[in-house]
Image (tube, rainbow, N blue to C red; front, side):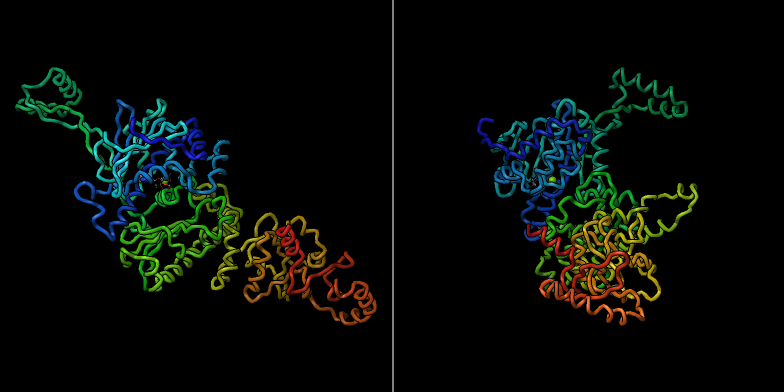
Length: 620
Ligand code: ADP
Ligand code: MG
């Protein structure tokens, strides 16, 4: 286009496009759901704006918030248009030329090695997936604040933007035209597209239409019949004896029925809000699909668990919470400024996904929606805070989330206890995925539970129940505090633990000698966060925690304790003098050892040796 302004893509975008356009990746289908998801986002935005200003919607067709897909088989063009917010010239340049999100480089590297493209949408670069199937893409867009513009690129490192003087005015919104590559002509097949939309975009909140062909019966005057259709009629009636009578009477009349191909907008989804349905009527499959569309995670892995509930009381709302199958790779790196994953809807209108306050940080890994019909449509954060609704919602969500996690923890325990099942029984089990689910959860999100214990005093005990760890008695499995307590020896008052860098290292510790010999269980805490955790977790079910490498360890009482202590007084005093009080607080006779003659013990309120190690590695 002569009047076009040329731009170069940001280097990362260029690299991404190179990878995509040359990709042999088998699941190219994903481009369609990325486009539909963008269209849906754009529609959400304009609908949200219209809450405060009806005029933004305009009139006539412009008020119809829908998504339309059209195929031009002759020219091999697939186009998808929405009546969303549209993009100004500036938006086009910024949104379709740069990548805002960090972590893109890491993703690019992964992809270059053949990694999973399915995550593309989560990284805020979903649009570029069009280059999996097209080598030339045009984006025509009209935003209320600007004229209509065309953005186009052939993935050659540059894109062009020009004012659109050639196409029909869109009114408002965006049309994306994909000039399909030869090897992607399958996307000109209506059936294929219908299947894809069903598969990926079932839960899009706006109607999606396809300009679809349809065979219709048309009545034409009998005398105007062409010969070919007469033949068709004959063969049909001869193949169907029963209908021959009806055919005969029809052919006696003056009209004739012939098949004709017409086109019309066919609705592909039924715009149902899953959360408004009765949980009993929603299948697991539907929940999984809904999760995938919500999380933009199309890895096909099912969510680990979900909770679908209605909250009543001060603030009424319905909600679905999901535990994703995997933690995002940067969950704990960006922990402090992680974004919330809860979408707020009021009367089915998407309001915002930026109310971080819905969930505390440690539960930030959950995905979900909250739909309230009692909140006003123009609800704002300030308003929610003022009426304390935010707190009410938050409390309920936390409770439901912890219930859900506890549920999978308990199911997992049931499973591991239910040994000795016959083969037939385990085969008929419909869902063997329950098994090991909590272990999976723990591996992905265990740290979140620990951070919860640190951050959320009011739920500390609930969260402590969810803790899992290795211990001197856990074998190859993980143990819980409840299990620990059930194995405690008669008379044992404290819960024993030791911290260090690994189970292997800790097992050799002299601090364990006596405890092991006497058959006491000792918990191994090997994650650096455990040191912080144990500063907050003082007790559980009335049992105190005792670090066995710190002073204060009492393993039973011996009547001769005092006698022994006195008889070694000379030695301990001598030792204390030699080491001087700068190095040790005291030298004591101890019954915590077995083979080892002596150990250095840290004081009750100071850092453990492991903590010293952690702090040192951090300052280096
Ligand atoms: P994401 O959707 O995660 O932001 P994308 O790469 O899919 O990332 O899209 C990039 C940006 O381009 C979007 O954030 C949006 O601003 C803009 N965009 C894409 N498609 C549309 C559309 N149909 N209507 C309006 N804006 C769009
Ligand atoms: Mg997108």
